Length: 503
Ligand SMILES: Nc1ncnc2c1ncn2[C@@H]1O[C@H](COP(=O)(O)OP(=O)(O)OP(=O)(O)O)[C@@H](O)[C@H]1O
Ligand SMILES: [Mg+2]
Image (cartoon, rainbow, N blue to C red; front, side):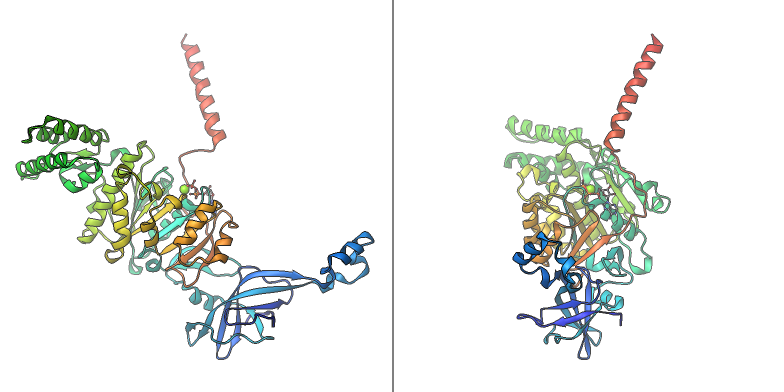
């Protein structure tokens, strides 16, 4: 075993089966460190929750004030040598016969505390040698390798304030998913990229050949492949008579195009006109609503892009770059379309198990949404509830967890939380993440960029990790502000010069 860290002391409440304190030998103990104590035939494991320094010379304010008026405490007494450190430890369990159990007996006062052994720590935390390497455990030489199944099967949420490192962590996760060997099980990955942050993957020398980018404005689906009920979900405010007309028009188009040739939007509008309804008002209102969908230009007669059934491949990444799209409603409709198609193709076994990663998830599964804004929420909630049975995983990323559907969030069995300072968001995260107790919640505000807490299904107890560096090329849209400003002025100057030269 490693060198001793200290000795267990007796206080009024400890050692108990849940906590103990030890006096630190030397200075080598840090908050967050894992420790172990020989415990009968096994090994008791704990986590340093706080470290406190003490010195009896400085206990009484009155005498400190008095001595500091003169030459100071240190000049007259050997005060420094009386300083000592006490570490408070939360007991996590006992490792015996290769199994972890709860502690039924406390460690004894006087017991010697050691640094946790890496091998035992790995199995204690539930790491997997073939898992996804997301970062490392602080204070220990242990890589955080998280089991693919435990992390993703029951869905993942990455929550943090803006700039805390959510997208960075997501890129690390994608690198790991794309680097997996066939024999370890590979999933396909689809990313809804709101700000064009993931494009670097397609230019990367290693990941480029595994990556396809589809620009948001090029996404298209043949009208005949859209289920009438889905179409109506996109237009939630249609009246009952309008729905009837639409259903009828779609039915008759399907009937007349049995050869599979499909139909265009224009033909759909014509079919609405021909519907056997006396009230023209109904038809006009329906056509007005449909023309909104027409404006978004993604419903085609034949063109399909991406071709999900053939383009979703194990170990491959499909990026849907939504950065050129302005309308939130169009983005929501596209998310609804893609998620529905993916889930349905997966259920039929036509595509491999996949992970659908959605950035800014609060915009697509909003907790309190107007009906017209909620088009993509239903399918995200359905996938969150039922996806695990079919190998359809979702990863929701959000900087506004308060606005994220609680149904969807609570079905994400693993939460990775980076820095959050807003008290409302903190409360919400604490309520929706099961593994978070008051101690863990308190640490969330103290996290630095790139530090994360993993709680839930993926790990045996909440862990703190430093997210590793990226291996893939970083290529973001949105250069630093000063550079954008400079480029703008240089361009303006160039134009002015050209104009002068021309005159
Ligand atoms: N673990 C890390 N190591 C090194 N740099 C990091 C790490 N995490 C984040 N960063 C850097 O911090 C910056 C912000 O990170 P990122 O864009 O991932 O934040 P975000 O949470 O996605 O923000 P937003 O909410 O605005 O999308 C980036 O420049 C990123 O490179
Ligand atoms: Mg981001």
